[in-house]
Image (cartoon, rainbow, N blue to C red; front, side, top):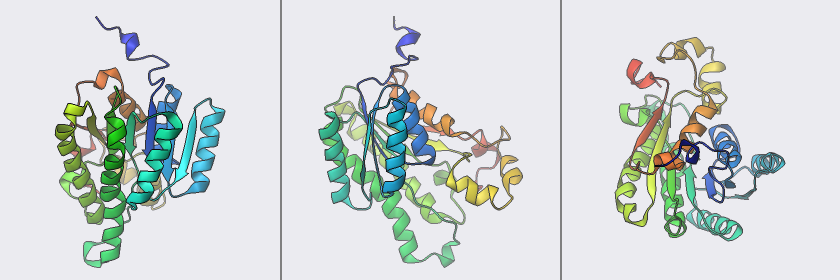
Length: 265
């Protein structure tokens, strides 16, 4: 019989390597803190070298083994190099977290083809590129996980952000397909769909700075914004032994918002 201490223990991720995109701030940074605090080695890939350097320095001060490489997820060659660097630096990759994302509010009639392409490239293409590049390394791991950060609005539609909603819907479809295709390789593939999360650029710009905080929280069953650790903890759960029989799932972490206001943006 397995013990609860095998799942909920301080060194839960000891010896595992996490490759994460967009981990320099916000939800991605919270995931780095959570998994690194549980003993994982962290490798962050993103475009902002200043944020990456600061994040890795802070992680290192906290006792986490961490490194980074500047890379644009829209460029497969850059992704492939970053993944190879991570595997070489830490001896492999056990967990891939696809967190890099681009978004902005814009009516679809006013959305330029370039604006559409940019978000699709970052969110959907970037996720595929990372999965493809990491696959040869993940299938060698005994604890292989792919977790992509999506949104419930991918299912309901996202008025004023159709580009982001379409990209996230594509990520969920990719998640479901890879869960089946890569199951024989022992790779578990899931997604986490956050609701409005405090301390993120999206919530700050869309709700805090515009004075819409009360309007948005009224649409959430729990009547508050979520916390970054709510998402990071959900990722840790899927990476833990408690998630060993979960694949092809979308873990919704939105305080009940999908049921109280399913088409909110």
